[in-house]
Image (tube, rainbow, N blue to C red; front, side, top):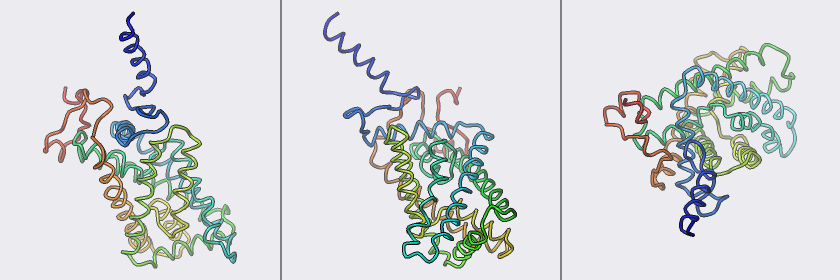
Length: 311
């Protein structure tokens, strides 16, 4: 065997180990433990492909599990807020356990709405997945997230899980959210959406679980520490206040979670997805199995852009 043939064989073997079954890179091309922007994009696309093609039941149940996990975040945040009351550094101590629910979600691969402002949108921007397909994922996942959060809030409001101090703190957090001006919540939500979608992009740039846990913890910690808002946490808190009899349902939802939802969506889609998308070459790990959708298909029909979908 010539040295040239040997080199080709070595390259083929290396490519086999350096790529996942989806075709997405499992190691960096230039430096094995560091991905380029295009390689991160391909890894995001591989994740998005799973989400867009997932059955409705799977998406909803995964979203429901994420909603339950966010209940942990709400529970720990209210409990720590009560425990840190009167301490000078309360603003930094109270959020210490806030990221726990998000760690469950990222490591457990549950579906969270704010994650999906990045992953499936990358496919839609290149017209290999239709807008209705992305909206389908958003609606199903958000419904699951909010259902899980509502169930968690109901349990916390009607059992003795919360201490009396934590229950009071939870109501105060929700009431403060409702009293915050609508547009302030939108912009707070934008920054939080920016953080979460950016975290998802960075999460696709790391290769081990320890790095993911550290990344998730540090990024998510900044949300409560800086007074920002996440839609599922805000919804859970608002519904808890309703179940506690402190506010009406319509007032609580319109004045708190709704503007946060608008902000999270704008922050994730505009500030992260569009900017990160703009700096890539839009290469797909399975380019030969995809086709660009027509404008009609992209806007009005449910397509994933796979070649087999057209057969």
